[in-house]
Amino acid sequence: MKFDKEFDASGLACPLPIVKTKKSLADMTPGQVLRVVATDPGSVCDMAAFAEQTGHALLESGEEGGKYVFFLKKG
Image (cartoon, rainbow, N blue to C red; front, side):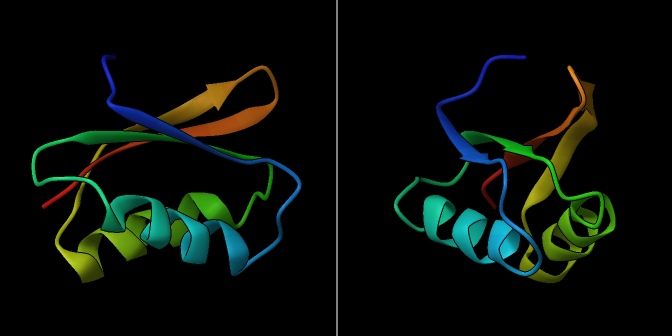
């Protein structure tokens, strides 16, 4: 999937992946896509809840090489 910016949250534990994802989205324009890579298993549920609560769209989530990958579209 095409994305405009990437944030690597590997090695960060809850709640840092969400906090840093929020900061990464802050300087993006609506409609742009952020790719987030995380190693924390809790980020799977957290990222879905974050997207729902903030109005951003979680376009896709999955696993890649033992890491969790998310594509968020800024709302």
